Length: 241
Length: 282
Image (cartoon, rainbow over all chains, first blue to last red):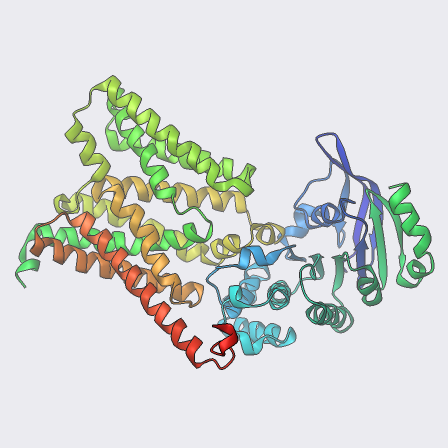
């Protein structure tokens, strides 16, 4: 059970408030799109959920465990923003990067060479990159690199997948493929997905829940509810923040 | 061969080949972490350690080891705080090392020949004890790289992902920095800072041109590095020139040859590609 519970989360740096008392509970199997204007604190909130930033106040529980315990159990998969910058010139093949995901997961799969090989192949097949397995990641397009990162995260068999702007800087077709892949992973494997996105229309159409933030939590509910109150929420973003 | 009959050549070859294996292993991670000048930076700090150690009556190598490991820890702490300017911290420590070395050397009036031997070392003058010391440092590097390979590779790719997975990135980074410092100090005093710094980077750069995977790049870097030691040492013996410099120039020559081969392959691919070779794309 991988429920994400954020209680009274507050984060500020240099007296600037980035996250102001956000509390929300994301259930097992949810696909949540985190949306909001630039500088709203979306990525900061995701990094707090990933345990990369400690909140100034409040607590995050993942699957009933505190952050320190959850991190050690390989429950969380994380796909960072602007991955392409790191990939440029990195001398690793798609296969090598996906196999690295096993380092993040259970020790059992790592030790069994045959199992590790099978998991790696399966993950590459799942994201549609088996044909490119021997290519270096720096030679791939932005969309393909993002799919490699998703495959690597999946190789660890996470219960929660956190993605920071997975489609930024990627063309229309490639971003569609990533959304479709995430939708399939959520439906078929039951992985809880929390994704920060600027592409509101597209993200909301694939997610079943939406968290709209502008330092505070402006809205948290189903995609249908979000669609119904869209104009009102937009007003909240820009005038009450 | 007459060349291999001399004891000093056998020792030089052993020390050189161990350095040739160890340096690219460390260098493969150093290059992708964008810290290619760390060997030189730590070398300057080690130089300050040698002069500082001499000043306070400490065995110079011990002085170098203490100050270089401290410097490596400092560089890592600065890198952690300013990830976007990782090379800036390295430059600060680099200049601090050079400045301290100049101040200490004028204060102690250490003989310049002694200073130069520590700074440049000489692969031809290595003793059995030196070979054992460098073999111990080499074994330590091999063990750490073997057991932490996946984690080091993942952290070089993206530290945040490793962090989220619960990997103690701080501890591993610190261990890697200290290991680099040990290799630099041990290598510097035995075979010279030039050889250690160059073999950490140049063979890795040559292997990158092959455009193969991470493990294969690492393997090829070791092959290029060992070939440079073998060819360089043999040439220096027959041409009667400095061995350290000849080994480094051999490594650079291999890099140039590989770059030209790469260019020829790219040109051939361009000619054979119907789209790229069309008049509009010329």
